[in-house]
Length: 136
Image 1 (tube, one colour):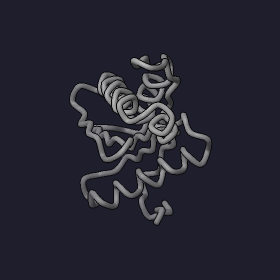
Image 2 (tube, helix red, strand yellow):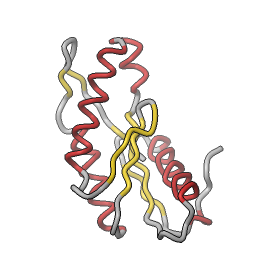
Image 3 (cartoon, one colour):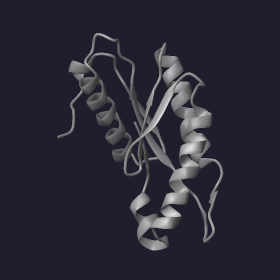
C-alpha cells in the first residue's frame, strides 16, 4: 500500500486540477520504480496498491525504498507550483494461502504505522498475519 503524505493540503490549497496532476506524476514515478512484472493500481483517493509476485523480504525492502525515493527525491512540477511530495509505504510478504483481504488489511496496517511514524518511510510487516493489529 502506498499513500501520499499530506495530499489533502495540496487539493485544499492548490485545487483539484493540481492534485490530479500530482497524482498522475506520482503514479508514473511509482510505476517506474516497481519491477516490470509487478501490478500497480490506484486503490482510491491518493492511495495506490502494488502487488509484487515472487517477492522475498529483501525484494520488498528494495522496491519499497525505490518507490519512496522515486517520489520524494525530485519536486513535482505543475502549472502552478513545484511541490515536494512524499509517500508512506506499508507492505508485507505473504503466501498464496493467506486470503487476499487479510493480506490487504495487514499491508494497510503497516501503511498506517508508517504514517504514525512521520511519513516518508516504509514499514514492512512480518509474514505472520496473526501478529499484526489491523486498524478498524
